[in-house]
Length: 76
Image (cartoon, rainbow, N blue to C red; front, side):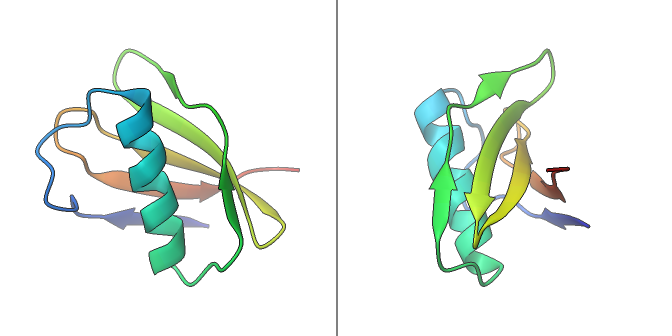
């Protein structure tokens, strides 16, 4: 399952901490109650934030330039 969202008032996400907070917020907005984010890592074009939400593994992709996000249910 994939989900895309517009930026949350941010024009850029330049730190791992910023990507973590944004990923947490996006999963909470999706209705997840129990959200735990792991350490983000950055590829050449995106932050990838591993997370577990309500017992399910997720990856939140964050565009560092625009702050746009895409959530993908990860394979367990």
